[in-house]
Image 1 (cartoon, rainbow, N blue to C red):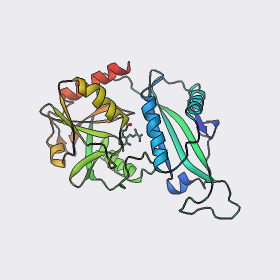
Image 2 (tube, helix red, strand yellow):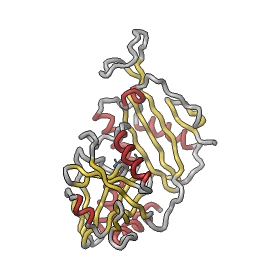
Image 3 (spheres, protein in one colour):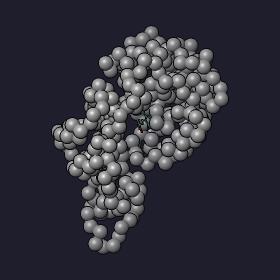
Image 4 (tube, rainbow, N blue to C red):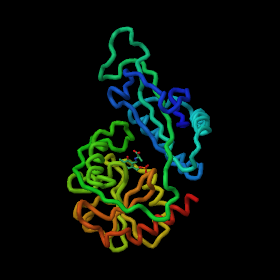
Length: 286
Ligand code: PDD
């Protein structure tokens, strides 16, 4: 495998990169991440992703280890080794390893020492892009039992990963999460429903990750159609009786949810409005 990984300013072969067991990312999930899609070798909405990365760092009080220009240089160096045209760039910053371990204190909940942040970056090919039609996938439903700061892109994804694993076992792509009877988001996506030409999605708050694809689709695609867009809480019942459901994220763009548990949504195939928004999305990235 020729893929390279950036770890703390060194480019390693993918299998060779190693982190310290005392890294707070490893011990406490004390870190954040970002995932930036590249289409045809070009970053898509880089500034928006970078801003969210800065915001996540700020929210958990980790200093950005690099300036914007330094990030650009480091990303360019890594991507010189990337042979793919369509890929995702994963960036992770953890609070890192205590600069002093001589006192024998290897693990303490409070981040009371000086730390050297760990910066990890790697790329993964987005196979099957560009697509002609959105994937049609099943979703399952679970209660949203995550913490209440879902707007931080935290590496602490225990519940998301658990719920997504249960989805995988049921041949589903996503688990849609419900808090107090309302849909929040998917484990790795934002959720939209369509009912009689009205499109609804949960508003931005601490209960969801403010998806970059979500904002782009609302501001640049839906607002130029004749369809009404409402950013408002919607219930599990509205989800179940929707004409169309689609979910959005940076790796898959737009995925049509045609089955919820064992029930078909609408006609059981990708709806017309989802398809329309998807084809505009594909046009805009070409
Ligand atoms: N996840 N909500 C959650 C919980 C997510 O994890 C993601 C993305 C989104 C969509 O955000 P965006 O449009 O910015 O990708 C919403 C990425 C893809 C991941 O964890 O790999």
